[in-house]
Image (tube, rainbow, N blue to C red):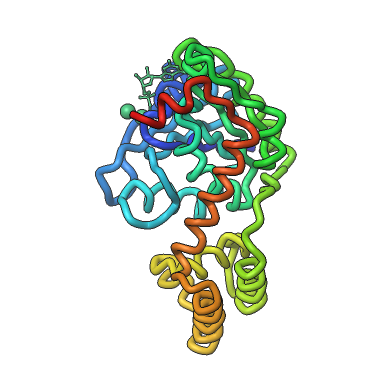
Length: 271
Ligand code: GDP
Ligand code: K
Ligand code: MG
């Protein structure tokens, strides 16, 4: 049995560096079907049965860029056995936006807090225990450039994949949003194929056109979903996509307050 592990993260988070470290010379480089986005695959050093898939660098799982469409399509349709979410820990606030979305997919996730050497050099500290609690996933500190932690993060991913232990996201949206999500989930129950129902409900609340198109719900169901979304939007006086985005940012601010200490916070934010 092959184990498929996907590397997902923002551009410049160190994905390629870690991919090289994990796979050595076993790489296969091509293009994703139909598009000129590079596709890289390799085998985990010393573990023939483990395939590492490098995904395009992305900031979000929205369908607005080719890279997002490719990465999202892979994660949703091919369903890797685990995701290594590699983040630039020296830019943690920005990187966590994607992480909050990856955790909702119903797939095992281990987070590689990469560039930890830079964090330390800057004199910043990240409370890993607290971060784990707030996110609901495994976390390993890494410096892909120095070859620190990569092996451990891959091992964790293999363990989670074998145990089929999906991430248990700790984030809940506000009451109004959660109520709407529950209603949407109940409405589309049994019509979602093998898609994760909560993930799908969030996408429907965002009125994600690509998902609506692919799901091709019958008229009655679509109308019911649209009514739920409209009711939520009216009561929160914002559109679905902004509601979800804003709540993600609030959640990330809370994480920043509780788990991250920047030595020169004032100086940095002034630049
Ligand atoms: P990608 O865009 O996610 O594939 O990122 P790359 O692997 O190309 O890395 C972006 C840059 O960060 C390169 O210059 C790497 O050498 C550097 N880099 C990657 N990982 C680390 C790390 O852990 N520490 C430091 N200091 N630099 C890193
Ligand atoms: K790059
Ligand atoms: Mg790269």
